[in-house]
Length: 214
Image (cartoon, rainbow, N blue to C red):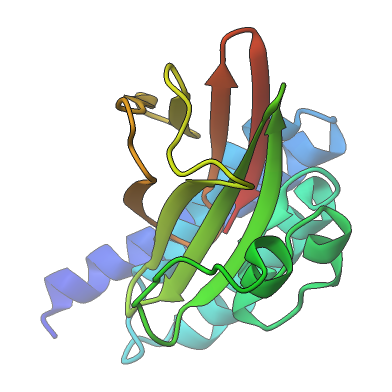
């Protein structure tokens, strides 16, 4: 690795420490939205520190500290998907995130992706009952999240006018509209540890929003 590249990585590491300190500051002030942004920047900076660099061990330690802080601050209303990757589901179960068997019974839809963690939650939109499925898998540099939504009960297709919106912490929200007689819906997103997003489901005047942090 060249000296220039190593210097760039060093600068990135120092930016991570600065963002972490800033996150701690805003967290103490109760400015949690700003703290979240700072912690996410810190994680992104620490992720850029290669194993061959002197700062790698400290970057790994700091990443864990930041993730613990994120869970402390946001775990009470965010679904912490990072816990699922560690096979910890107690909080998820309390929030209604159950196994596919518990939600679908014997009529589990085909989900071919292997070695992925799958949980589902029943979503009530008035008289319509749907199942939101989270299918997550840890890749080398990021987390793949497949979002699926299915009808429950005797329905064989999603209700007309169902809107499904994925809202990232930063950037534009992506809204999808279920097609007539559509049996299910699926979209895939990629996130890094610490990133947060929301999923909003809307049918006529009924809206349900689920918030997640990796």
